[in-house]
Length: 314
Image 1 (cartoon, rainbow, N blue to C red):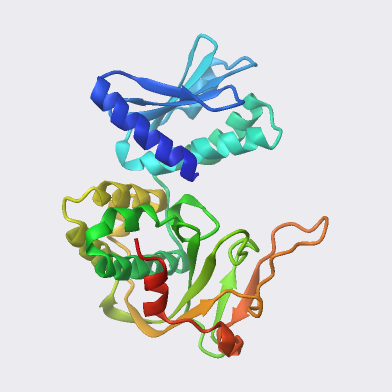
Image 2: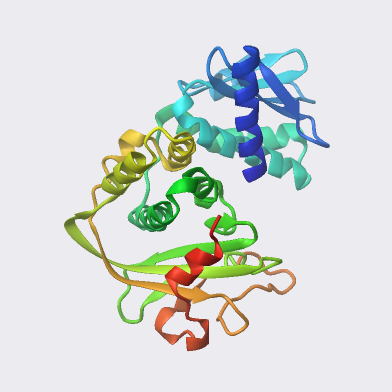
């Protein structure tokens, strides 16, 4: 999603500057992305090959998104700018389905059906585990912003958790994966995808694990979000930060998640050859999910937060 998110933001800047609708075609596809400066929203267009009846278009059109046929192009446009990141995520999935071999119309219908309820009812609730995972990412983000106050935009740009990237933070070939847990005995974190701890061609990869205790009145998502926004103030990064949050759910919903988190322990590990990571999958095996027992990781994998921060310095 990163390539399209960044490209869409560039289109927005151009559209506002030139005061006209701007779009660009996705390479090797029948799709294009664009921005409408007058309505201040992104749009996505697909060169369709099959018939799209009016009643079908009406079914996909909701209070949050419009779907219309204009000549040979299916025009999908966001209505509420607060949901821009979710819209980009949806369009990215259409592109990915197409790249994996689906016909462009089938890819579009498949994803629209999946996302229609989100734009129809704003039904984007986060489970407690997902709330805690977001809190953990924001906890590290806040630390990094404090460590590098002169490059807050760069720090925000490096936060990739909401974009479904393999690693939550990425800085010039050096990445950090954040995991959170409430388990006590044993302390364990769940690796939901074998790519999350795959170093691939990275220079460095670290695991930052947080162990939390749920305590009413302690730090919460609304509190940490407010602190980060205050720190960013009117910097260039605040716009990106708010759009990233929108991937999870609307801000009004985030403000209701007042679960209190008390930090029990913070762990840092270098993902090296001795780290218990599964990165290779046998033929015919799909995605692998597994638990890592934190207290049983080899001491040679231990890392230091201060050292890690120096390694990823702007």
